[in-house]
Length: 265
Image 1 (cartoon, helix red, strand yellow):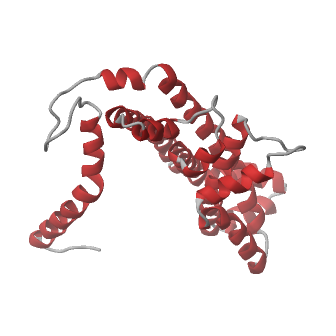
Image 2: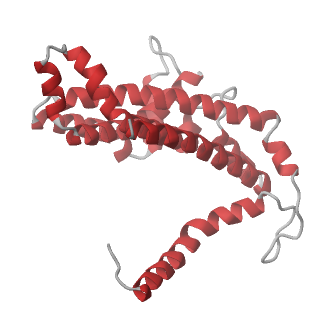
């Protein structure tokens, strides 16, 4: 909405700050402050330390961060491949077929993630697909949960593509495979990178399904944060949360740069 007049803009900015700070910025600021605290009985912490970060960047916590990164990268790549392929296939279907595909890929996000975890636990606890107790079941769960977002992102981008580009290439003798690789995928690259970044961020923060599936040797960082706070180590949990947020933000910034470059190609 466009606002005309200095007073109207100032009012809109004030309303934004009043809503943004308490709802979004303040909780994150509290976590950051708590990550440096030794005690917090009043309005402000009574001591400052970096010991929590030493613990968060070493030992089991460092291993948990590595596990989260590996899981998020693998899950986002699988989700991107499956979601993009399904979106390309659904784009060729009639409206009824696309509706079925949309419903199918919306199911994992339409139900609680703990239900997805339980279903995978039941499905992959016996041969021939025995994944229970392995890192593969955690990666599979994360991929299932984030594939819907990749599918929707690519589907929306496909709906916005100008079909004339593909039609011109085909009229000049380009094969369907060449049209896909040289025309369609480059045009979809901004949406593909955006979907990969979103899948990575969602996987990094996934907890509910992970709690039901993770083996002791494959403990992601959100599980470590939950375990620390459950034991009463709130300040250590806050430091782990800051590390998780910072790592995710850095990866998203890198993906955003790639996406911006793809947009201007």
